[in-house]
Length: 183
Image (cartoon, rainbow, N blue to C red):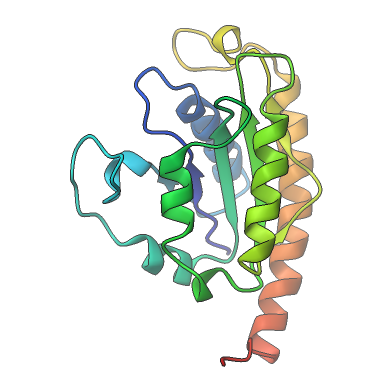
């Protein structure tokens, strides 16, 4: 079994990315994929409102086989707390695949945040997969109980997970056979 954490991208009150992350996590658990939603509010960042000390992010990524990022698009970009967390590691990311889900109040579903984060993770020697999920019009996408109104998202997420799992398997085997050279 693989361990694939989900990193939330926002510390804002009233955020919707936590609903999207919980939905993705639920579908992962249905497929027996071990996951954990990592909330930046629980990590020691300059943008955290409360200072808590859970398992360090570096240890989580060291153990992880891949990563999913669920991030909102703020002003055509990604939140500062997410950048701070991403930049806190380096070697822990090497040759690990990453899937990105965008959220936004608009119709593009965070397309710009997905595009920008792909550039960032490539620089960190991660392998962003092609499939992404765009949670559009997020303010109207969720029922009061946190369930999603549009059941078609399950197919989109499962397509993303299929590709992510393929890369996870191949890259994990590759990392074990040929470790990344340290300089």
